[in-house]
Length: 308
Image (cartoon, rainbow, N blue to C red; front, side, top):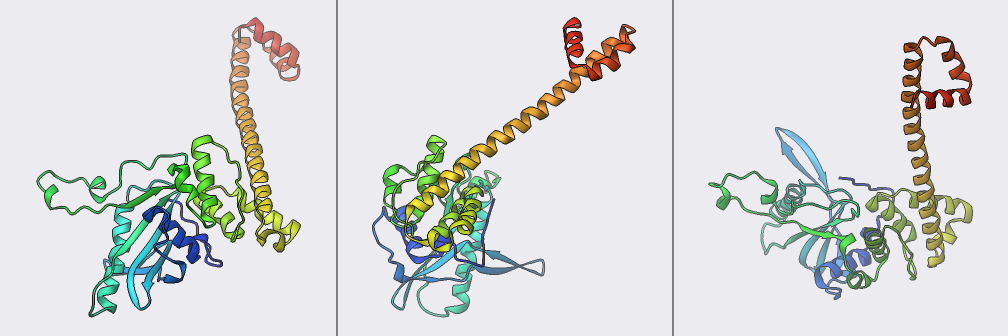
């Protein structure tokens, strides 16, 4: 799993309007069931004891959903860029800690549900079959009926259809749009629409999708144009950054391809030269070895002579 978080600044999902937008689209088909002003930040770190030692575990983002003073639910988001077959165990741990906190802090009254959404952004690898606790466990047939299952609420963002992506109204729509286009077409064409949190969108593109070039180009743009040019609600800035980023990615890919080709070529050339030297030694032509090292035309002639 790749988890990238910068504690010095807010993440895209930590904004209430983005968090509510994600949950409303994925759970309620875009209907505004949860309103941004009904959300409050929840503690993301919980602790547990193993063999006498205290360990900490941390959610990506978690918020309480409240209606006035009434607690409706605790909702958490977990971001994944790589498949994790142990995710059901991790989610049980997160949710269990939240329920345990209710036992400790709420002596009376009704308990509220804890819901965790797993957002998978990997567009190059399938998640796989493990989507519940039973999928992960090796259970003897005799015990299967007694092992409680625990499914994860997995949403593969890159596989969302165009109609679903269109229902997002926050900046998360840009991330989802990028992810789905890369999954389907292998390339990204920016769409129109103003950005409210361009800095956080770039961080999300880098962290969720594992593509650092967006963050790097964004930083270069800040140095070149100043912060004001980047934070204004103007997609032309974002689009230009994406175009530069994609171009840089293509150039980097070509460069790496050339380096790999050169490396393989050298390896092949070394083997070919070693074979030629071996043939010269077999035929008692030691004097030709020195000439081979300095005269490429003569070397190529000998390659043809010995069929190399």
